[in-house]
Image (cartoon, rainbow, N blue to C red; front, side, top):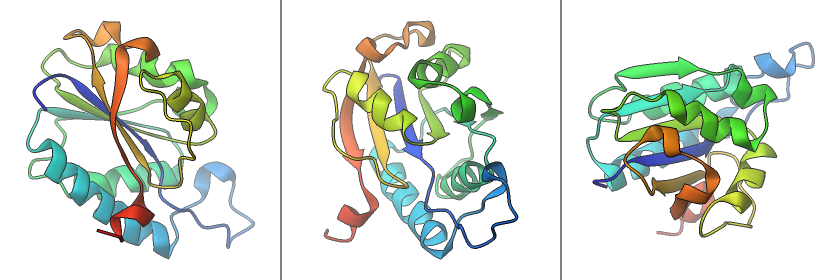
Length: 169
């Protein structure tokens, strides 16, 4: 992709096995640990080597997903940020975090949660109204060369990557 792009990524499948953990502390389960690298490898094959940033929710499961994705790219993200609004905020927070991207960034990977990502998906150009399962990626093109222009109506979905559907290829 030559233009600026965003991948909104729902964290991989998390574990509910330890009831003593807070929601922020829940880790990935075995399926999540398996799916994240596969989906990341597929995404890396689609976008190639681009100047990349990541923005991640502070939740442990989102951070783990982000780390597993970063390992699948030929060069690591040159800027990584955590944004509490990706855990506590609304759909607009998911695009607002893009306004802080460096000008040279060509793709930003945003790691967050449902139901917010599903709500955002319906607001984007070429809206996606299907379910956004765990580890799903909404790959979008920003219809501007300025990150400050990142609002839902200027982001067009170009591909939806669903882990279960990768198994059918």
